[in-house]
Image (cartoon, rainbow, N blue to C red; front, side):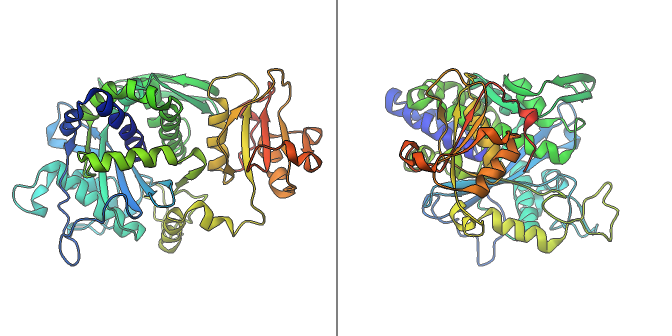
Length: 441
């Protein structure tokens, strides 16, 4: 969502240029960073001059039950490098067991409880502190201690606001990897409903996207974290795909959603910052956004605990993953046996397919060029075309898509036909289905 806020800056700036009503952005709630920092409460470095981290907090407010305050249902750290033009996301499972600052009454608790405890005890940061400021501050301090990194800004988004942001861009296209079935999805009236989302490319409105991102009965909290990042990336893709004029057209609706549901300590009320964010958003391509999750596939669980209700992660491995999360695509490329840039061509004629497949490949560790449309409309089979001799990447792609050997082709003799700067082309044909991916992720 923090990356989405950067993309929204493009629309807001354009809206200002064409309509001269930038004052609307002033209504977006600004939170105060009330954390006590070593060496004094000096402001973070200028937003666009060095890399920065934003803690995205998905907030679940308990309507009609103010005594429960608010809960952080989602925690995603977003790293943005405005110099080298890339970003990354790291999801933290809400059942992660951590030490929470200021809580001397317990040894630790689930990480998502930090936000609610700060909300209900705002005076830990001084008399008169607003609950939402204290909640964000305590969540940020807790995440800093857990990951061993600095959180520069926070952004709080409630679920209604997320739904409205997706609706403001007329929905998103999501490549659902498998059937999502939740027989007891919770409803706003404290009841339950049956949620069914079929696999494959799905066009989702805000409500469907929210349900897809929130359910965890269909798989696990780790699957939910991956879906949340997928939805955020799909929203980024949708807004970016509109072009500048389309972004400007959506700006009034986006501003309405932001004003109602987003609170952030980022200085987005400054015109100069907006201009810089707008330029940055246009320069960060889909191949420059990396996705990470803390899960048993990426970090070891501490074997000294049963890890049933609380998740105790190996501290050294958590902080190693946090370091990798802050490394740019170029910094990690040298550890690969070979480097190759892959471009996905949409030969199936399904709207948004090449962009969604590119997102999946990027999450699997491939380096992507911007997707495009295939030059021909009749493409019965998915093809992998290697123009520069990258056999390891070619074979990984074949496994990823389940492509037969006759459709994996060494085209080095025809290197002149390759798109500029591209090593391997994946042409998505009519036989493509997300279920055929083997999941080398």
